[in-house]
Image 1: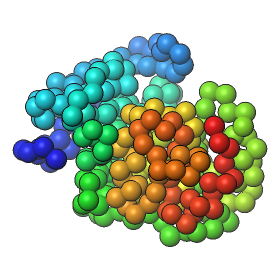
Image 2: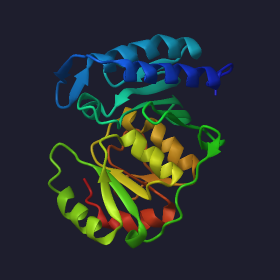
Image 3: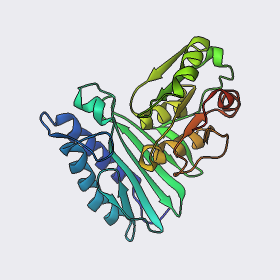
Length: 251
């Protein structure tokens, strides 16, 4: 990573922005072009990060969900409020998701849950962590013993059949509406697998590194190594991913 990069200072700033999210009592909601909802909280947090991060790594650029940006050698990928719909409805399942990439390769990831005050983080080659606890994906290799999670695309027609089958086969299927936390939960073993279609780079930029540094895999739904532009993702330990991949619709 670029030096000097003081990750403890970064964690403190992320936590401050999470506190801002929790303390917000009123906000405006509007529909985004295409699909989805956005609040002025999303926009404000992204703007707060933009200046901070580009100062933290001189020459870097930020790509944010709400106001876009541009890419450079070092690029930050930010979802300032993953789970906006949850936030609007007061359901405490949202996160700040942040990752630093160098020419398409992840070097640092942070997913912060302000409600549970948990910060999941990873550095390339240094493992994945929640606070000071090192993370490891689950060892579950059988769908019958697995707790699974997914998210639904705007038109999930092809998903319903596979979800119904896997719900019946497994310990259960969860839909949280926050992909970054679902990936973090795969990394720490709370979930055995997660898949979703039609995701954007800022949804998965941090979570992919968390899972891989916790000795898991992140594939597209054709069983290939996923990257920021794959759109469709499956995260699990390697053996469970091999079992699940043939049962998921290829989109």
